[in-house]
Image 1 (cartoon, rainbow, N blue to C red):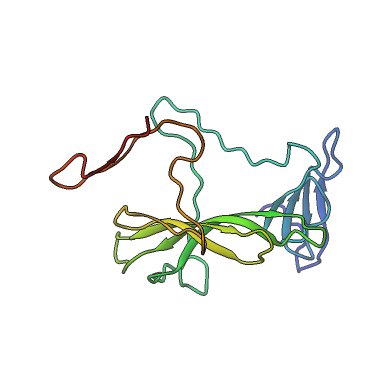
Image 2: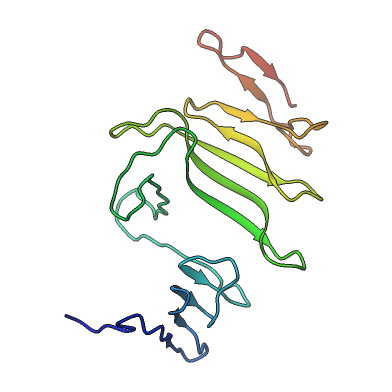
Length: 193
């Protein structure tokens, strides 16, 4: 074997210090979390937490390779109740989300917005139809509302709030807007100039 810490579920915390950070790497054995930059969680949970009082509260991923590929972030999901089981997901399942939260004077559980990746159709072997939804929370609201989506067909759907309207060119930018069809390159055209 190798070195084992907390053998027999001893719930003993483990930390590595740096020159300026007493908790550069901290394992919270009681809550089963890894925390970078602090010795307690951020209150939101998560197996891996990055905590700082400056711009170092960042996760950076870099790829250096002599090709056109870049760094990647993978989010995945299955309907399995155990690890390493690939039980198929279903139409409407959320596969991953990126959520932005802010401190509201009470806690940090209030979401301002999110980007969600969902199944959009019937998945099968090496076939995963997907959609991306964009949600925001209105001023005074507590729940997020879908504002825009790109579905599995590539269609962009914008859903303004009640009484609102969709704005495609906000500000004073003179940008043209064009809708194409199979037969026409200018089925609908707005000259922004």
